[in-house]
Image (cartoon, rainbow, N blue to C red; front, side):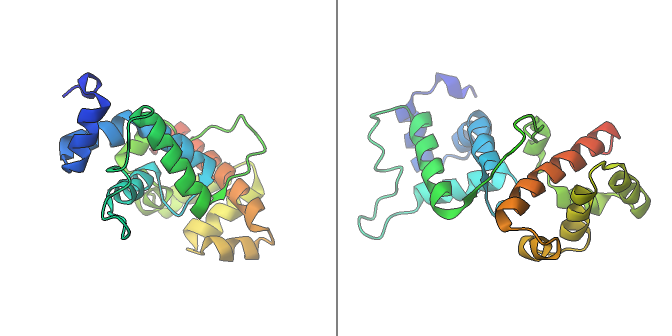
Length: 194
């Protein structure tokens, strides 16, 4: 199936019919870069961009109590579907989640396609044995990043508990968390563990 041959009207109709093939091809593949960019921009409670897509799918298809129509039912094609979706997702995240503060713009992100395979840092901890995990953590050059990863993922502390343990504000924590995960994942990739 080539979703590029579909018009926005056809895609919307298929989404409203809950067509699984069109939903997968459009939201989860074609629009993945859009969701990944917004996921990277906001500190959501989602583990990965795929969970954000799941949330938005439910959000745009749930009927409103006042009208009985969903947000997608109310799309009037005044702009492209992709533009409308970007605005809806940005507004959704802006209202519910804190924006990430990124100091270093050269941070490598997890935008590689391996995230499509339900990649998460928790999965890495469960598949690594203790020796590999200790080796990877020791390879992290930044001690604070290493501590954050240990508290958050190895010891299972919540974001708030980790921030408090490390004496950080939540805004500082979110920024540091993003960089620590990036550093940890880069080492895993270099070592061939993911």
